[in-house]
Structures are given as structure tokens and as C-alpha cells.
Image (cartoon, rainbow over all chains, first blue to last red; front, side):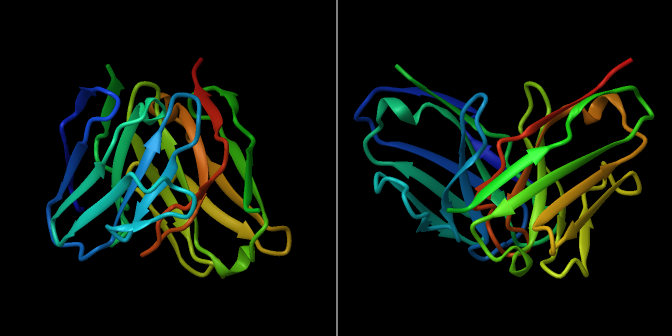
Length: 107
Length: 118
């Protein structure tokens, strides 16, 4: 199974800050890496697919990068509505594992 | 507009069974892999199972293999998850999602809560 390691596990940042979350996989997955935002009581929401492609309707302040085993999700200018937990997920091979999540709090 | 509507959750005793359903609309249902993902209370997201568009191939997490069965009825645009021999650790909100092998989960149902308790 492909192991996913996200960091940090939590962070607190201010509106307007630039925030970066990293995801490392235990083996190369090319660009089969996706990022989701999850808020309490709501379904997960796809932000980035194929490592760096912005899902339709997602604000351009979100961006993704990386390939192989190291990936990043960046929010260029944090907004109040960006609170929640962020998950990376690999769609390269089953089981389609998720990272453990990064809980983002707005200061 | 793509919509997925999960249903079928509830309270069940350990060892019991439950069948979840997910009705899809707004897209050509039979052309896409579909999946189930769950989130236990206070925990992260866990992939459970996926099925190809034709229904010809299915995939399971080790934690549910042999107990859960994913299926679909493309004539009804509906995805199913038959859950047998349920355990306390299966307690979670279950989401259906469009996507699977090589594809992201781009649309999600609203989730249905399964509670396994005596």
C-alpha cells in the first residue's frame, strides 16, 4: 500500500498569509495526487487534481505542485472561509489512500 | 448539474447488515467509476471501495474485504454498498463519490451516517 504523510498536522494562520501544506508518498505516483477541503458536517470538496490542475470553480488562490513522491498545496492569500481540514489522496493504485489531514485554523 | 444523493444509513447492531444507496444525476452515470469513502467520528477520510463504470471490476479496502459488496445498476443510475457483519469500527459517515482508478473524487454525496452499536 502507498503511505501518505502530510505536514503539518495542524496550523494557525492569519488572513492574507501564504500557507503551504506538503504531502509525501511512500513510492512514486507520478502526478496522481489530489487535494480536498473538508469542513465539519459537509462533504469533502475537490480543490486540485493531477497534482496541479485547479478544479472548476475553485478560487485561483489555491495551487498545487509536485510529482513523484513530493507534493504541495499552497493558498496564496488566506481567506476566512478557508478554515477546515485539508487532505491529499493518491489515485495511482488501490487502496486509494488519503493523508491524515491538516487542520487549518484562521487566527 | 451533477448530484449524488446518499441514503440508507442508520443504527444497526454488531453483526448486522445495511445497504447504502447513492442516486446519481446530471452526468452519464455508466461512463464513470464510482466509489465509497467514509469518515469515522474524529478520524480522517478512508477509501472503502470502488467500481468501474460497467460494474465489471470492483476494489475494496482490506478493512472491509469479504464483508462489504459494491454494486451498481446503471439503468437506475444508482450505486450500492451492501454491508454485512458490521462492526463497531464501521461506524462512520459514508459518502459516495464520482471517481476512482486514476481519477479524483470530483463530486460527492452529502453523506449518510452508519452507527454500529448494541
